[in-house]
Amino acid sequence: MAATDAPGVRDLGLDDLAQAVTLSASVGWNQVEADWRLFLDLGHAVGVDDDEGRLAATAATLPSGPGLAWISMVIVREDRRRRGIATALLKRCAYEISASGRVPGLDATPAGREVYLRLGFQDSWTLARWRRVGVAPIAPAESSSALRVRPIEGRDRAAVLRLDAPAFGADRSPLLARLLERSSAFAAVAEDESGPRGFVLGRDGRATTHLGPLVAESEDVARALARHALGRITGSVTVDAADAAAGFTDWLAASGFGRERPFTRMYRGRSEPFGAPGLTFAVAGPELG
Ligand SMILES: CC(C)(COP(=O)(O)OP(=O)(O)OC[C@H]1O[C@@H](n2cnc3c(N)ncnc32)[C@H](O)[C@@H]1OP(=O)(O)O)[C@@H](O)C(=O)NCCC(=O)NCCS
Image (tube, protein in one colour):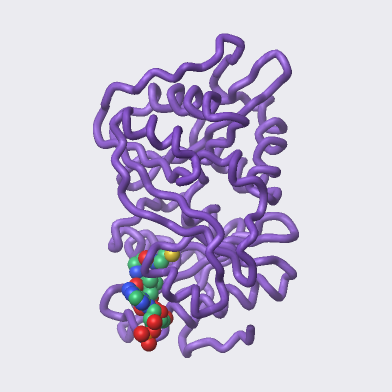
């Protein structure tokens, strides 16, 4: 794909943080400054200004190891839509990623999917946003007695990386290190006599605490991890759960969560998933993979 930019696509930097947070909040998204900082530190963000010099559109790329990179934060302010701006930003991001030898991946909203299909992205699997508002009783998880769930500690970092890479399909240790820092109040690891069986991380947000990634070897382990984390979070919680994990999403529904909206995981030029989606009960977030 050629890097054919619409005029005005520019790199974003730390000076743009405040405007970027304002733009993502204006479309109801959950990101805080720490999220935008993450894209600037670990990836690359681009944007388009309006005639008054205000940031009106964004997109970002986030590499995950040598083979995959995520496209994130594709937002065009409502008054600038249907002028090809998202298409131009996407072309820039996809060109940059392909030139580095990686496959571009993303989680698409229904509106975004219409743009991405035209640019050669293919559907891989589906997920949905679930949200708990307020505190509801949590449905019991029938975890096996041999399973122990406990708060994550520094020494668990290697185990988290070991469990995440085969599930996601790429090494994303810099991202996981950030999420570990931001979720220490509720992050957990599950283990039995043979070692770690799953983990859950998350992060603070503008309107809701985001729970994920949740990687587990079985639904039983996933429920036990979610139960641990949910017991430590007050207020609104969001989980972006794989539709294929139907038993887990049924449990979310029984625990006070409502299904809000769908996403489609897509890759450019392939539909075959990276990693093992069956191990991913909840993703890190549509903007993180
Ligand atoms: C999705 C979004 C980024 C599209 O931005 P945009 O600049 O309007 O997109 P483009 O102008 O490049 O659209 C290119 C084509 O995609 C299709 N398309 C774009 N938005 C569409 C929509 N809402 N419904 C159906 N088709 C759509 C159309 O075919 C369009 O071409 P056309 O205008 O000539 O018909 C924008 O609507 C937005 O910011 N939405 C809210 C945030 C969001 O959902 N972001 C996507 C995250 S994955």
